[in-house]
Amino acid sequence: MSPILLCTLNAKYIHASFGLRYLMANMGDLAPRTRRVECDINQRPMEIVEKLLAQTPVLIGLGVYVWNARQTLEVVRLLKRIAPTIPLILGGPEVSYEPEQQEICALADVVIAGEADLKFAEVCRLLLSGKLPPQKIVPAELPDLAQIQLPYSLYDADDLAHRVLYVEASRGCPFSCEFCLSSIDLPVRQFPLDQFLAEMDALLRRGARQFKFVDRTFNLHLATSLAILDFFWQRFEPGLFLHFEIVPDRLPQALREAIAKFPPGALQLEAGVQTFNTEAAERIERRQNYECLEENLRFLREHTHAHLHADLIAGLPGETLESFADGFDRLLALRPHEIQVGILKRLRGAPIARHTQEWGMVYAVDAPYELLCNKLVDFPSMQRMRRFAKYWDHLANSGNYLETTAWLWAGGRSPFRSFMAFTEWAHAILRRTDSISLSTWAELLFRYLTETEGIAPERAKEVLLSDFMRTGRREIPQFLRDKTAPPSSSGPSVPPLPKRQQRHLTG
Image (cartoon, rainbow, N blue to C red):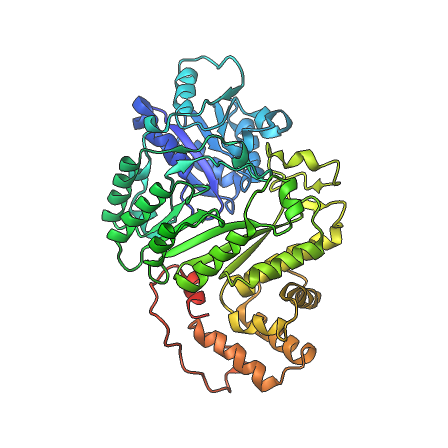
């Protein structure tokens, strides 16, 4: 019997599609004839289409997201030219809003808007009976989470060994931050906790060790957060890694104590700070207590072993580069392990669009719809910010040059402004932001520290070599090899994964 194919293009191979597994788990009587085809955005659309059509499908469902929208459009175009009679069903956040403006939706036979866990199978049955829905855009009502079959048994041995496992204990967000689609995803809904933890236990017994929670606000309901942390603590083994997104100004004592139990390398907490500009925060309805936020981040950094990842957004309406720079420096002073600098995006359906005219917000036409400029920040400045974000990720967030980068703003100078100066200097030489080796970065940092900052060559080499030795790198650049290697760190032992967090543990 011809199969029903479920397909999406992941951003990377290591990402396992959570959405496809939910759909698979809820196909009911159609499950035996449903197959999952996971590709990634680096594969050629022609090859993806060949792979799909080789299975002679009766219909194809495609998950569309901001990271794969362009490539999926190419796949749909090809499918409609080569096999126009095969019905195409689209779903996912990217096509759930503004479908009338999208070519990919015009080409599709059906578009499911919203959470399609249960609706997809319903649409498939209709199409297989030879009928079409009354309208092309099919709204999916918010499903009762207690009625959804959980997908975790569909993670196979290869997923457990090589991929990030996504899990969720809740959906929705109680906050109304206008840059985020979760701001319109109300109310917050919880999966039955006992059922969820039973699934987590089954994954652990099968050997799963890395769990990425996609809940927008893990620490919203204290009792649930504590139950989940206690569950994993009671079953803790070396190599266990848990990622949670947290509201940074909500960290009661009981939660602090639970987090503090976990050893280095076990927890990653993603704290969405986004901005320290109170006027910009109020404008986009981002409500947070900055005093509590700073106190909580200090506690996490000083009294727990959690790897702390903090987010900032550049380009918010009404925020200047100077304001952003001050906010970056304020956040860096709290010593998170990583600061992710993101460029504002106008996601389809997100309320941030209401500021477009007043603040002159100009966004890219194609996904991921990043801000190009606005009334306060011109295009060249936004380009500088993009390069800053890339270079910061390469050097600081990666953990490869923790000691060396700190020398760029030695003497009490502004870290943002100092690193921006290095960014401009390095880009004038490199003329690119990707495919830059560690050795190339080492040589550039050495030149900048000695030629621009006036640091003695021998001292600059010592700091660079210390970073190479701390991270266990073997490919030490030739110009550093005449130095005597400093002693290795006597800090705590670290689990084998993930490597990016390992490099921060002794920093």
